[in-house]
Length: 65
Image (cartoon, rainbow, N blue to C red):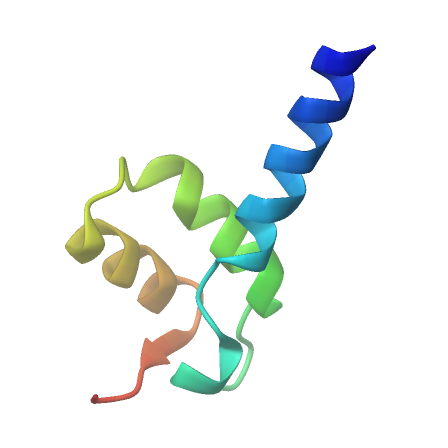
């Protein structure tokens, strides 16, 4: 039971620390932000350039910081 609770807590904390939508611009026909982030997190292998490219393919560009 403790392991299940720990796994749930880790999963929820990962969601809370994802990229903020305010730092991204969605374009016409863009996939919903959270859906795009979830998909890109899985396929980017923690490489930021891969993540940004993936998000662009789903209609999102990151604001210049």
